[in-house]
Image (cartoon, rainbow, N blue to C red):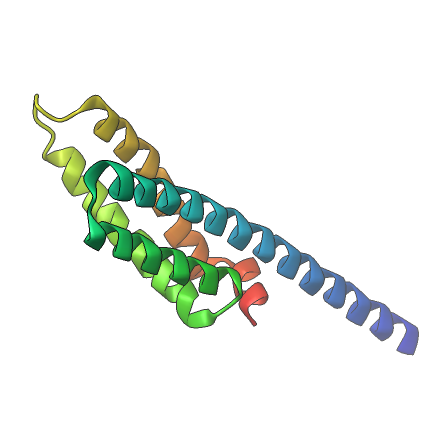
Length: 134
């Protein structure tokens, strides 16, 4: 009987290790996409718009993303809430499209909508992500 209980514990440990590994992969993927996106926006604000407020905002977002990548639980919920708010903002932007709206903005919104939905759902409900942050 002891051997069977030991094997069950090993199986549970393997499942937990697998969840942590999957959770880490999810977090790294989301963080990489966010850092690339924020870096592009940072360069856009810095060189094309000369907007110091936009540069500051992008820098803060990158800092929060790095904290998220390092496994800070508060950053997980910050990114998850931000993604959920992003869904609302993208839907609003798509709802208010006019003939003057640039095509690149519509394409960007159509790319960001599923990303924001997937990010918020994974960060709020994924057992693998929870295992990584524990």
